[in-house]
Length: 347
Ligand code: HEM
Ligand SMILES: *[C@@H]1O[C@H](CO)[C@@H](O)[C@H](O)[C@H]1NC(C)=O
Ligand SMILES: *[C@@H]1O[C@H](CO)[C@@H](O)[C@H](O)[C@H]1NC(C)=O
Ligand SMILES: *[C@@H]1O[C@H](CO)[C@@H](O)[C@H](O)[C@H]1NC(C)=O
Ligand SMILES: *[C@@H]1O[C@H](CO)[C@@H](O)[C@H](O)[C@H]1NC(C)=O
Ligand SMILES: *[C@@H]1O[C@H](CO)[C@@H](O)[C@H](O)[C@H]1NC(C)=O
Image 1 (tube, helix red, strand yellow):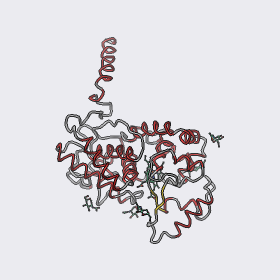
Image 2 (cartoon, rainbow, N blue to C red):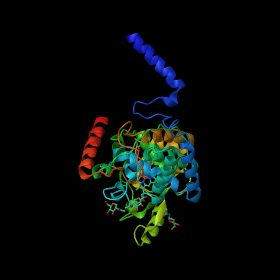
Image 3 (tube, rainbow, N blue to C red):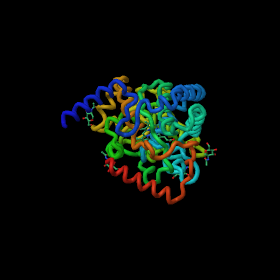
Image 4 (spheres, protein in one colour):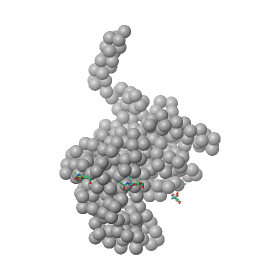
């Protein structure tokens, strides 16, 4: 009996190695999920992303941040894409998710559904488009297991506010990421996404107001420049600042150079090069871009699969911004309870 089981297990291992793309992973995703149902999908996504990136390279940081804000609070389920009443876009860390990237995801969905029928979720499209945009910006590529389904309702406020704040120190970030199954290495690598994209004064004013930050220390000249810039932020929210002062639009390891030079924009960034739990990894990534890219790809594959809905859970949304059958208050509450249990079970 035991040996039969062992033989089946071995056979499964061998077949798995040969036909890996068809195998469902334990979480219900698989590499070849859309190979039969929508073989053209990868080409559609790549083309749309390429065109959008040519027009505005900011689409890449915009997409990856949307993916983070989707996956981190309750799981990668496209809940962040929903708009209107009760949507996550109206909550705390909301405002600055870029509309053009949200629209791109739905444009790709429309093209994929026109070609294949409604078989691909908005959540899969967000994960794929983010991967392709990362490559356009100079970052690493990775294989992405697919088969995610879309949430029926937005995530509740109590989960959305678990998104980490830029004022957190490394200890608090480690605890925040750890609570979602992300390791210290994942934290240091994924923070490297701040190597491109922009921010607004509200997110980093605490580095020079009321005083120049000393814990962790910010380069005083850099702080003075930021202060002068933000003094001109009228009306509030109009000024933006690149996250990486060295190569603002390129996905590379220069973010870690910024940290070494005390020119990380957020307290949460700068802390990584100071804290003894994270500084070795951060310095390794500064010295070795390949080490950063390899780890970033692994951590992205992991983040892109946090608490996914698969099988008959959720739905394939016909428009990324609204559930197919808009949920009433009761349905929303029921969904949220389920998700809370799911989270607790995962920890
Ligand atoms: C470690 C904890 C993190 C904190 C505290 C944090 C915080 C922030 C803040 C405050 C902004 C700027 C918002 C604004 O002022 O408009 C931002 C932007 C951004 N974040 Fe993070 N973030 C974190 C992790 C991540 C992760 C894991 C990713 C992706 C893997 C990511 C990707 C980005 C990108 C690309 C932008 C720029 C977005 C754009 O240009 O539209 N962040 N983050
Ligand atoms: C929601 O998205 C739809 C389609 O993208 C758009 O037409 C509508 O204006 C958006 N509504 C809100 C409240 O943002
Ligand atoms: C974002 O959240 C803040 C705080 O919860 C809220 O005051 C603001 O109106 C929201 N932004 C948008 C665009 O709705
Ligand atoms: C990190 O922040 C937490 C919460 O604000 C605080 O209690 C703790 O002392 C800080 N740790 C360090 C090492 O600064
Ligand atoms: C950031 O600010 C610059 C300079 O004012 C502006 O040209 C650019 O459009 C802004 N970017 C975004 C995404 O708002
Ligand atoms: C990391 O930080 C600790 C504590 O401040 C320090 O002793 C150590 O030398 C640092 N390591 C590196 C590689 O900078």
